[in-house]
Length: 112
Length: 110
Image (cartoon, rainbow over all chains, first blue to last red; front, side, top):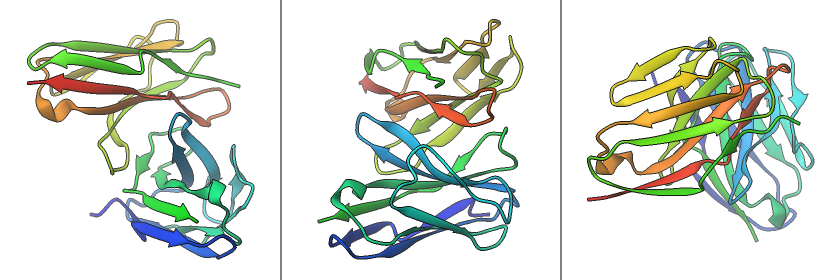
């Protein structure tokens, strides 16, 4: 039982490049989330998926897209990376939106 | 919007001491969660609270859901070096979105 897994762990991109961050959970959770964590800013919600087939914007969605591929997987795409997107990205999941969230280990992204 | 306040930003304690952290808000929350984050890792859930007044323990950790639903505290007893890390409170407000505090960095001196 791995919980929430994320790939890759580290990534360096040049400005303008694109990439997809992958997230999977094996807890049979309905809801999944993407956050970014920056020094002094805490955790900020980028996008979430309350249930399979739905996605909604969070607090900081600009520059990102998401896909809820199936119940287990929720990916985050940066179409044209910018230095302001340098951050640590966490995926999380929960049984439903009102329950506790479980986090993955994070992806450390640097955009130069 | 809803905000959770955690202060101070950093706490320094001696190994073996107890420490208490609290989290406050001007809004009512329906759940309170406490997470710990180690360097280079994701936040790990320590305790989840779902009822006002609820007091829950997890080993040396004890947390309470405030009666007013606007605060929660976390106690760590008999601290050890591996308690070092950042402690976040989080809560679900009326909109069911999870709001996080900025976290408290705990240092434990041996």
